[in-house]
Amino acid sequence: MNSQTLSSFFILLAIRFLILVQVLPSGSSNPEEFYQTCGNKFSCGTITNIGYPFRGIDDPLYCGYPGLVLHCQQNDVTTIDIVNATYHVLGINESTQTMRIVREDVMMGTCPLDMVNTTLDYSLFDYSATNTNFTFLYGCPTLNIPGLSLVCSSGYNSVYVLPGTQGPGKCNTSVVVPVLVSTGDGHGAGGSVNSTTLDQVLQKGFEIRWKMDDKDCNDCIESKGRCGFNFATNQTSCFCPDQPYISATCSRTNGDRSSSGAHFFLF
Image (cartoon, rainbow, N blue to C red; front, side, top):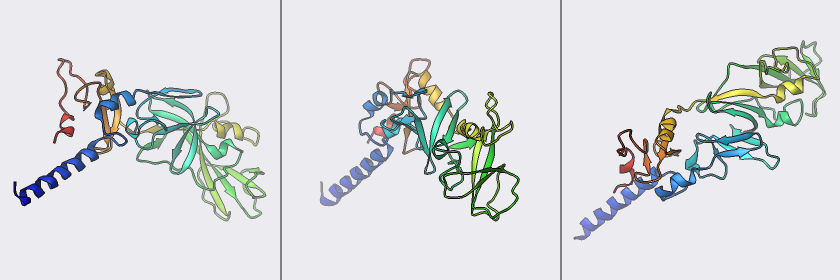
């Protein structure tokens, strides 16, 4: 083998290695481990037995969809970070792909402490139709504002709360917070809200829906596989207990193995 042929061989080998590294789920180099390492379900406090597309913070990256990472705090409170903000997770309904969350700063007091609107990552989430909005106005001049007036520990003498989405107008800033229209226990925003019940309404949170299609994962589970995420394809993968370790499904109804995905690991 001459030097030019040898050089071409090593270049080709390097390219194939890079392709393999990109295709393998991040955080591991052994596809035999994927099925075992993604067997955990997340449980923390009142949030229990939650699987893909979510993963716990201590689980491998490839066991969950990017951006759907759950944290278990020391007080058994489940949190999730969305667009650089932390939310308490009050409930997750996997069958409807909805979750109820509340801003962490709202859990600390009546008025939001972070002067930013509530914003979702719309590539992952949508707001539910069960929500409405409240607007908190900070640093307003002496005006007759037809809203609920509060005294908050935010550095402002008074804060006004109005229903709906409002801009700051003549005030220094405004913060929009979603709430549930009704929670079924009389504490939703559908009823009258005053300074006494506002805390209860805010801390009931609001509902969002995650957008990922669950068909691929359901097919995987039915074939006795475990769902995970392939960072090379940006899609759900099926991790199997034996070869092929990554596939569309782990078995077919006729007993034949699916070959899709097996070529990922061939040089």
